[in-house]
Image (cartoon, rainbow, N blue to C red; front, side):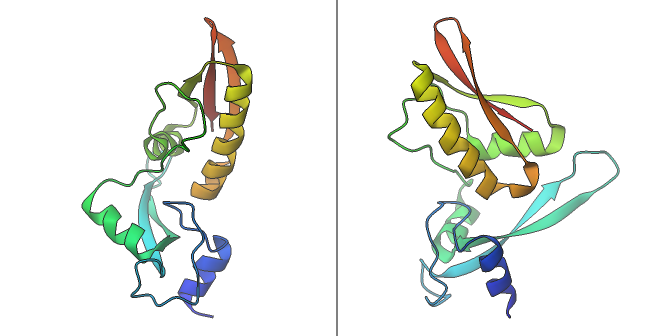
Length: 148
């Protein structure tokens, strides 16, 4: 089994950037074909250095990431106010732990829908983090919280 097949199987043949399926039969030279993205991660505790995490990505997503900062988009069907950048928040939680306010939602139902989506997305983006989501009421709105 090739390294690409190992990473693809582990990641469920989904691109870590766009979260869309990756077809393992496509050419690695095609923009929608599979590729391995090596991400350098920083460890939580001092002195333990950093590591490299290999993740599956479409060739086009991986190439585009080299030119611009990687962005995991929030879905258009969620009702969010001031959503936080997902990758930046996840990276901070990996380094420091704790919690991040990810967005404000006008109703509890909007908050629950966003929390469910975010929980699944972060689990695929950074499975080693073990992050959880919560919706907290306050000031007439609902805060979407990501915890590590």
